[in-house]
Image (cartoon, rainbow, N blue to C red):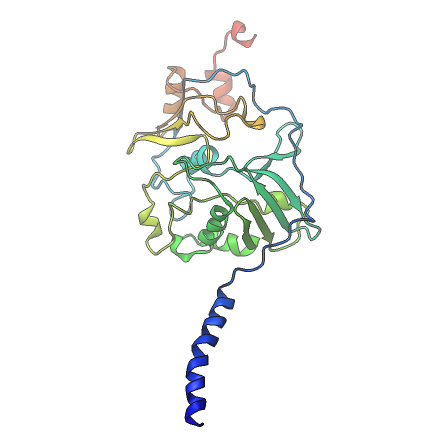
Length: 302
């Protein structure tokens, strides 16, 4: 190669590399949503009573103190996790109305199930906020998918769940989510539901279980963990400015100010606390106890 040719090559090579880099770094073309047939439902009756009074404390019990505050990873599937999922974190994209059985909005305002029976688009509620004030977006759902796949959470069950149920979870736009299931389903809205994880507060590096074992993280639900005494009790407190409080299907819901969960390791002891008025709720799980120990006056039966 002649000297002029070598000089020209040296001049053109950086330009070519720069052009190639710019092409590779360009974002993928946005998905065309113009043909999506969106569905919503705000016509069913409210689930709660909009006139319900708010306030007070609901006292209940659990048999042991939680080994972790996480909802994934080791030791994260106890009774406490059920309370935490129900009132702070695991709010569905859509849910079934308990009376009509119709799908109704929850974290998503609209949805669209595609003809393949496994692809679903969701319009997320732009009002949704984490308890620290940060907006809740499609990226937080993608983060959950990545979390469920990660070996760093040390949770083989959720790792397998992610492999079995989700082909992909995509943030099409900040408030548009696409979920593709692994297989065709006759009820994809139920089968391929997913919850959000605060991407700005949760990282997935090694050491995940220890890092978040006792961490109080931002939540999407109406209650936050506000108080805890190890071995004795935990308390959830209602967020006065919760983003969902005035939504159609949330009116009259989540009325108590505090949920106080006391550790009582014996069911009979819990019944004693209930009889003394120190628990608001108790499940009678045997006919013998109901017949012999539950004393209810005629006036209380109405």
